[in-house]
Image (cartoon, rainbow, N blue to C red; front, side):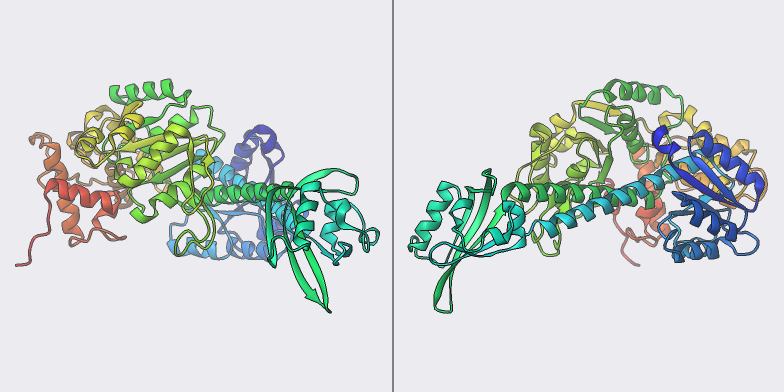
Length: 595
């Protein structure tokens, strides 16, 4: 959000603790926002009604009426109903958070405050609110277009005199019905249209109705021509032959279609941003100063300013998505949308629709037109994660977009253009895949214009201590704990462990350790060695395949060999179930027969 927009944006802070109000007010004012404050729920409602802030940060536990009741009161008042409310709380109980969403809140900010989190969530929800208001304005404008641009309808007698001239015709031809009734229609028809109507009245062709597409023109009362499409039909009423002429201004139709497309795009981006906000924000961080990470970031800085396609390679859990975000944020497209799609998580029969969109009725269940990720990312960046999982038949269509910048929606005939920078990521060996016929070689060469490899954590041992400290700070703040010490043995174990799950596995271990911590020293949890037991500093290092096989087996044993679902091994390992199944196949892991 730019400073001009921030300066025009007002945030209401509600907290019974003056220290919190001062801290947050200083933070938001430094970011350029106007700030209001209240120390009670009643005062907050009065302020909101009087000043109409753009966003409300509301404490949960307050004397008098609490935050939940305050939020309910705000949502009951028409003037404040649509103002987004973010709760501020140190409560970790899921039931409390669910209750907050039930009373109308849109998000939570955890205490103690993390300044970057506060600013990020404030910016995100202000952006969503702005998009929502823009969408409402676009939809209202589109509604007015439909109301005021109904087809012009003219009824003619056998001599071609006008007997009916509806309101839309008055608007189209810029004259009043009273000035046209009883007069010849010829004045409103260009020569070719007049000839076609005359022939039809004379029985050529001998049909009840004909359709005239583009190529015909009508004439306004002021003499100006305009292109039309029309239908001409004949009916018999009261023993007389009547002719009905229904005309549509092609220029107006195109304007309506453009307005509708604009609304669909805005609606699609709005929904995508809401999905992003609701999605988990517990991703790994690009933290460290190892040689491998520095080399990767140097490549990022070199390629970011270009529009070159980038292929990010590296094992699962190394932070490939964050590299993609870094490229986008350093590029000239940073003000546009970064849209992402994990190719491993979408069913094969929906992959084409997700990428390119579909038209209404294109297949069973397609009740509305849907914009694909390429349309949503137009002008910005599309991140295709796990590109190696994309079905072969879709790869050819993806190659066409990369080479020609054009595609069609599923069930559509119109060729659409797009300006999208594509960044892809994979843990697969695509060169080997292409030799085996599992990935198109021409697409691989097109994707591999600028490869960036992200090294695994076992090759970045010096990055482990700063990563550990970062995750401790993150989860200590989340769970309301203060941790100042790390057992030396635990840090030693972490630096000796081979980390088959990479940074994501480290993150989950630290989260578990913080949850188990009761004092100021981090709880001493065990890393998992390739053999399945606790890591030992002097133990021999297993091969990567052995380490990965043992780690997967441990997760499968812990879930009774359940792979998918919230309680499945894929969830524990932090990978899609399709990825886990393919790794099990590659490593020869099969469920043992019951004894």
